[in-house]
Image (cartoon, rainbow, N blue to C red; front, side):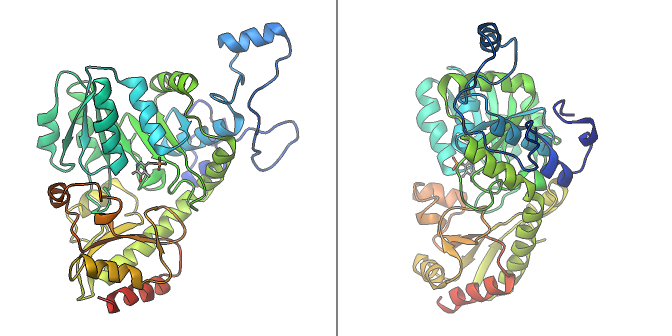
Length: 398
Ligand SMILES: *Cc1c(COP(=O)(O)O)cnc(C)c1O
């Protein structure tokens, strides 16, 4: 278990950890967690300063790498994920950067799911390749492809589940076994499920990546990220952070820290609304196909039911017609926000083919199933009847 947790919280449930874990109080006795807006810290004596700098005394030195508010967020997130430790970063992409810079070197090989966040793909192909780290992209649910891509120098397997936007569900335990045969690490981007719905470390993953920007905040206010995993592994990441500086700000850490308190409640509400809308859309003759792992007809349904506590807030669907029809559908909605962001209390709607996945070639889109008539929604916390009425406006415009 987490050695930073008080005895009273060892083995506590997710809702207790969400509001209690990681909090340290100052001598003022404040009930709620404060924001420590300070870049540096003062030392009692020259000797004390030396001890801090050498690491002999573990106290704060400089907020590029230690800040009490950031630490509270890291410990609370680690507790929720069941990890030994967490490291916060300035964004989700900075979490991926920090992981790769700390754990990989020129000559290493990565295997990455083809259905990951587009910027993640660009990061591996444009930048890691430039520094001599080669990446093989594989179809996420084709385990033979993962197996066949393994090389003696494979150091990292990287996956996102469920995938965006078609909700492919990948078996984390199975990938962990494949990674182990070469001593490679398995990193899971747990952005879509969060620890409220899925615990990758319990399923055998080595590292969890988060874009805190999405559900951890939950209200679309701040950009941030985090990595969760074993203490020994994360020490190298902390050294990178200290050296290179993609640090989370104390203010953002405070927003995420308070966001975690309601995470489980929100994820259950997002999931309930999304399931309701998916079932409703599935009944509409003008909708060709709905992609949501909560539907028994989805190929990932059984695995998701086993691996996740609920099915999450993101779904997509194909409307009857072409790109123009999908655009008419989107433009006819009045409540949903037309934005590519997700993980917000406000429902968002987007056309993946010309936005989030617009950089893919026609061939890559075909392989990924990103057709012109595909629409994605990230279901928020509005009354579901109002969301149905809004989608009906889209259907009427087809
Ligand atoms: C948004 C996102 C990221 C990147 O996070 P930022 O905070 O925007 O840098 C990574 N992975 C997934 C799955 C995302 O949705």
